[in-house]
Image 1: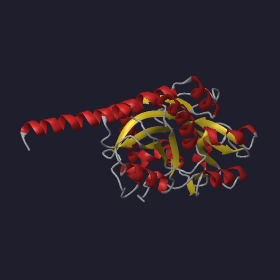
Image 2 (image 1 turned 90 degrees about the vertical axis):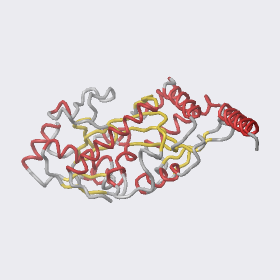
Image 3 (image 1 turned 45 degrees about the vertical axis):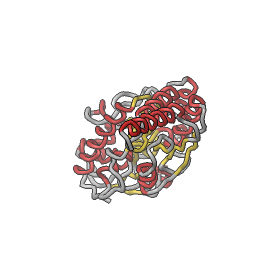
Image 4 (image 1 turned 180 degrees about the vertical axis):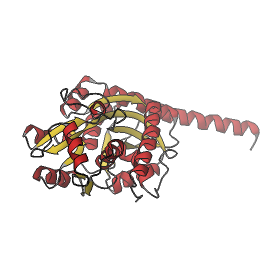
Length: 320
């Protein structure tokens, strides 16, 4: 083939590619939630996606592919074509798994394209209502006076509630007993029944029990007080200024996405998160809308990987 023919073919290919990107999306997009339906990650995704598909003028199908602490769904997206039609909802577990798992079927950094942060929500430090401490400082004093006697539950070893409590143990020099469960439901049920003493989890999944007087909130895990619970102190202001953690939820795609497609998704999802109706719906779930661009999400992921790696090491948590 002559040089002129090669040049013509190359120009034609670029033109076709550009046209395809300009037309994006021309068929439904699939957003993978790597957890079962009903949790906060799923709820946030469906609220934001409902608006995003209006803005895009194209259907967005939410698929739940749970299992292995979000690894199954994440691996599915990592191997998908990087054309913008298969996306992943990443969250705190996405960063935790980089250090918790001995081997992953993907590279947490190299195999994904961060697109936008959608929301976050801090945890609440919960105690069973009959326990002899009514403030966080009273809990600390009690636990230090009774080392190895206070029991906390979590949704499983390596889950965010487990690591958030482990971080507190490291920072405060506490000695507690961890009881992992298969999910948030049974972990909270035993907390309500008094078979375990304390737990960290999202307020969105516990506010009903708090309002009914079955659980009491002693502190929040964010750096600043939460506007939903303005009278509840943070763990940071209660004597541990370096303590802070929130459960974040963002959108990613496979590595190698066309820049124009990534940029379009970033713009649309940030616009969706900032929509007043979307924010109202998220606020009703006590989840905070938090629009952040792809670069910001990428920086957050790097920060979270480093944080949880340090917690896992200090807590002597074995890799799975």
